Image (cartoon, rainbow, N blue to C red; front, side):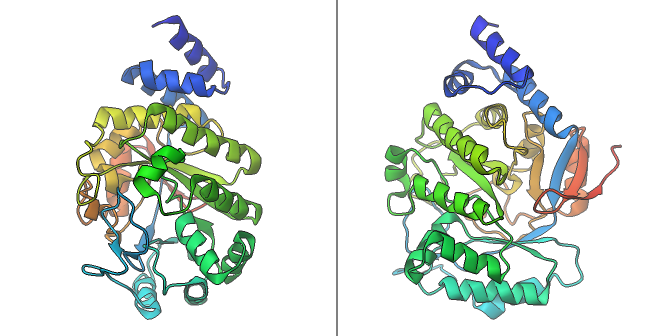
Length: 365
């Protein structure tokens, strides 16, 4: 091992924060086994052997969208709605009702940006969900969806967030972050909310008392320096608010979009990215592998590279990544399957709620 890597390892093991330059050096020069050892050390220091999951389901109100992101395989343009869907409030409530009597804890609501689905529509939807099932945590809307809602309603971010929270919104998912670097964002999603606006919306949510997740779309045209810059901005915001629950690296998929010529990252690169994320984001308690996107096998391997969360049961209610050619077609895992996956990796499965309160710990076998 060269001296620079040893110096970084010493800092990580001492719990000392890495500089952006050191984070970049890990991407450029750290071998997979070395990164895995460091990341696992951080993971076990923060979470021991625990690996978290939750019982959740997704509602995707529409895949009709006013934006045209080059990497997106999911959305259909508003003016050309072939293969598009638009759900009514009652159809979405029917999904919620289908889980009556089942021990789900979270409804995850994200979709395209539809001009007819406005702030009042979604406030009414959330209030109706909470009226039907008050204990259900509603995690909903990317910053991109929120930006459009607020601008259309002619309200400030703070006013719009307050209205949603008063209606029962519990937290924000992390989507829409992509890569913050403006020159990359211009090439892959030029017409939607900027990275600065994404950060402002999440900071406003944190200041109003709700938590959120953070994501990063990786493995396309970005450089390692862009990933570090992205994570640095998240780390800085977390320093200010402490409002992020978890960080979720999202793997770029090249099926059915305008970037099909870009090769996807290898599994080795996926694992390296999880490891560097865990090492660099010292003030994030959790790193999540979204198993419907990367597949069960890679998700299981990631538990040795800094990951301590594998998302949830999903229950075959998401189309976002299956439409992009993810490893899992019609993704669903029962609680028993998730527990088995985690146990096979030598970890302790823990069912959590959205905010990482422990619901049940499963005995290590």
